[in-house]
Image (cartoon, rainbow, N blue to C red; front, side):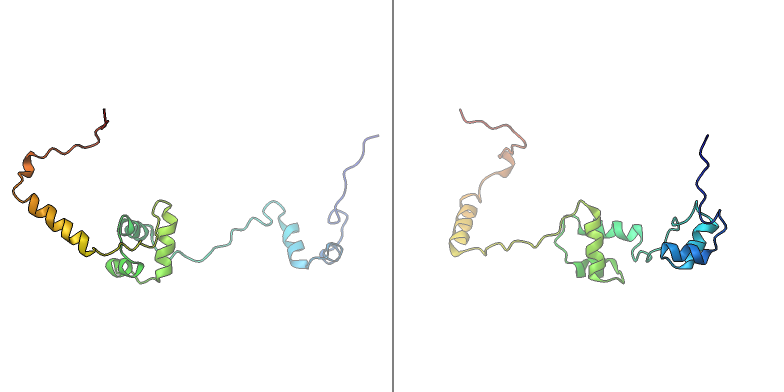
Length: 142
């Protein structure tokens, strides 16, 4: 003899209050589920609106790409009314731009200055048009 289908508490005629007590849940979610089980829990919640538009974000990426500008300078140049943190987050979202603290380069020492001056004096009369520049050449020592 075939078995019958299992009857839920609702099908057996239980009221929402009793179902909620048995499940140890409040009545509101139980009633919401019973009203429409197919869409229960599928409501999308809206988040906070984006502060920057896509265009503004692209402008930030363009400004920050291959530059040494600070976040404040980028904000001032683009005349944006957002925080530095917002600009920093936009740069991080790009995925391609990496911001890092610039390494400090040592100042020219007196020896460096002397050698640069010496090089300049030795090459003042050189015709730089005749100097060949090798680009991407495969240089091998024989």
